[in-house]
Length: 282
Ligand SMILES: NC(=O)c1ccc[n+]([C@@H]2O[C@H](COP(=O)([O-])OP(=O)(O)OC[C@H]3O[C@@H](n4cnc5c(N)ncnc54)[C@H](OP(=O)(O)O)[C@@H]3O)[C@@H](O)[C@H]2O)c1
Image (tube, rainbow, N blue to C red):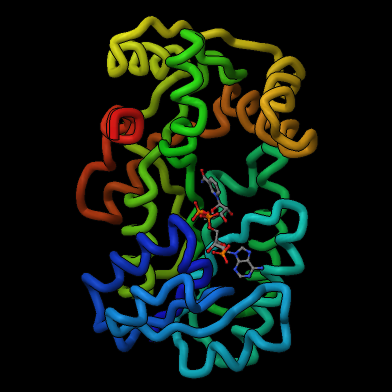
């Protein structure tokens, strides 16, 4: 059986969809905090089990019969190492054979603050002795939709990534890769990213073209960008982490030209302009 944590999330739901194209619904277990939130999956024949990273004692029983597990990294930045550790311990106790984990691009060399919890989780996986597949995901193109409408409205795209090329791919591409790895039982380290990346200036030009309104790109020092993110409502620590990510992307931390993702999914990755256009106009 194939189990997926975070199955109620944006990536998790796409992984379940991709798995449903590869294996029988009854072989898929959706692990979620709130089973009611995925009643549509239950209706499609997927097994739904309660699974909360913060309730470690409940995790091993929920993994009964599971041989391959996808651990989708949690979204509680700062709490993720104990959470992921609890899942890995439970998987070992339950006899899971393989864990795939959604890590970050170039995890062991990444200078990003966000990479720290992924490095620690990868170390826990290595120490577990379980077979592992490290899905080192680059950025989701969809991340840029969060600020896209505001950029179009104000005619300026703010950021700190300068000339850095961001090899982003669509969530659906990463989801297909995860489902492929799980269904085929692949192990190893996979640096996953889009075939064709973009710079901040190219993104601004695309926003202008798609919207028909002028959008210029304005590169800010990291501290100024963090202040802007805080001004628009992000909590200070999170604003600092996002500005760090952007500035490190400017130094190449989110660039990849390996083509591993497209090889794994057997098709080119979704063109970034397509994802941006669909999100902006749809
Ligand atoms: N590569 C990138 O660009 C990028 C961008 C953003 C995030 N990420 C990482 O990738 C992950 C998946 O992305 P996403 O877009 O699918 O995020 P998402 O929509 O926020 O989904 C996160 C999932 O994690 C689950 N979760 C959170 N805390 C949990 C807990 N204590 N126990 C069990 N499940 C828990 C959520 O469950 P509920 O439905 O119950 O809340 C949800 O299903 C994120 O969690 C984050 O680690 C990567």
